[in-house]
Image (cartoon, rainbow, N blue to C red; front, side, top):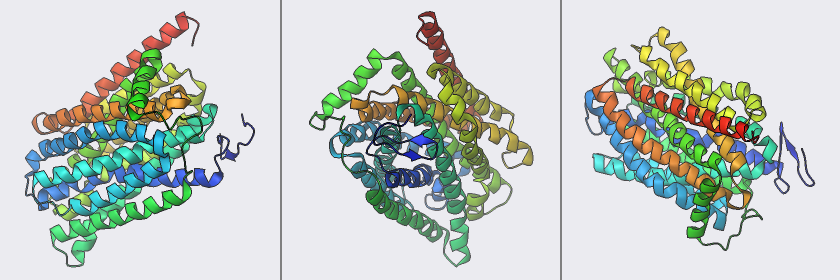
Length: 433
């Protein structure tokens, strides 16, 4: 319901003081942020092959190593930037994050050793921590409580669109530059340079469009340590927040597993079919594009039911969809065959459902006065999940099979679904559902 001073933006009502231009800035951010946060996975197998000469059979472990380094940095970045945003404002932190992403993208293709790639991934991680943390926080800042699910769904659609566009566009760039006479290494450098320019321009766009300042309900004089402590305190006093942290551990790992290993699986299958590394960068992204295209459309189906369900019920349902989507990939033999398409469609449904379910619960439960800190710790748990799941997933990918990381994440989705269902039953027994 609209309140005094609020305006409508599509199906959602904005908080008083949030203008439509600010919401349009959020829409642009939705399109570019997650795409930029996952795009590096598209060309990492290409860089590992052409810059470092790492054989296909060892790339799962290399991917896991890079992901672990990235997530160790994110463990610091998410919590730090979430609390910092309550002191200096969301717009500043968001724009800084995109600048860091631009620098990291520009440097990544010049790496010649694993140590150099690890350093660039750490820099990239701090950019992700700032940008994606602010993305989640701003959704909660901009929409009234009852419409946060609707605004999340709108942003989720644009997230998916941005990821698909980046995957298709970036995957084809090396072959485009190679056709122009560039060497394989030069083609990768030019491709990542284009994405670096997009990130830099996006930083300027968000600086000009997002709402400046700190929300009036936030006490900017609180020290960062107190803001972090309040985020932990919110989880101790509200079991729903604690469960949403568990969901973040799994759901953020979901997205990382898809970005890393669906692309790597497709890349390996393409090279096995005789494609060059530049051609495989485009061909190998097909399974990922299928999953993300599905994730692009699915929020329109699930958004309204999520807003109408009890919060724990919505989380149980979405994580159960994740269980089905991820575990189904055990049946896939070749990710590039037409027979694999339905399974990657299920993967896309499971991935975005788990993400939206976790995001909806934390958006509704986070106390307004410490919202950025609570969401910062939510993202911290997500980073921890990515750290654990990609590290283990890289070993499983090389030693068990390309399907194994997905199966692991599917089982964890099921575990969180059971936890949410148990909480729902507890609330109903107490008359609180």
